[in-house]
Length: 297
Image 1 (cartoon, one colour):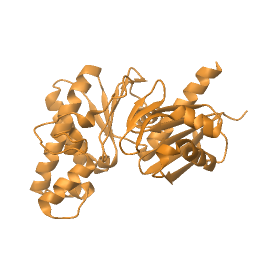
Image 2 (cartoon, helix red, strand yellow):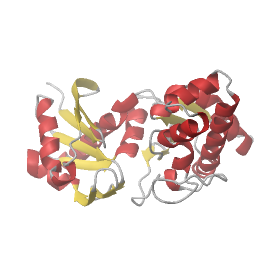
Image 3 (cartoon, one colour):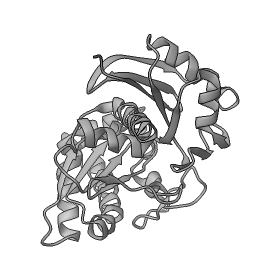
Image 4 (spheres, one colour):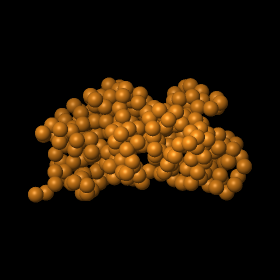
């Protein structure tokens, strides 16, 4: 008897990633641009992407950025995608006619890593994707933690002594210190170059003193923000994802050191995510599978 198929769709600010799975095997996957009008025609966009997967799944999980109420599936707010109080499950069910469940992209990314990736053998994990934005998600005793819609929004915690202006309008937010765009802007201002965060990481690896100072400040701010969460939740492994994780040990080694200094006597692993930008879509599959199994029992 063939396995029941489930779909996971990650609607991002730039791209939409979709995966169809049977059991633990990926059947097909697609990546499409997210239209600028997605907020006003969300269900239609998801329906088109779902159709490209080729086969009709038993259920679909859809995950989005911003503030999300995981219990209701309501996308409370997204600055980048321009919606407020978007009922994701209702929009998708209306468009495609199959059971739909919604969630947050970062928490889904953690679920993906915990099920298929770098968190498979650990029950207490902090997932920290570092890209243009900065966020986090927590796995505690094997379960993804979802409290209020603000759960995991560490990017807008004041970090260190920086007065850098954040996109939210405040000064000193973690996102304004270690977000990829913010790092690139500060690096360009220092050097007059046109480099991005990747070039900054290369300069750090090459021993550039100015680059090293900027990088060290950013990593220290990140560790200052993460250490209390690690202590409170009993985190055993920190998984770093997002574009900045491509820096590898240039990022991980100083982060380990900074965390060790703030958490004496604790053994905390710091590793890179292993699923790349597929993690949230794979996690969305697991949301759909869990909801369908619960509703079918």
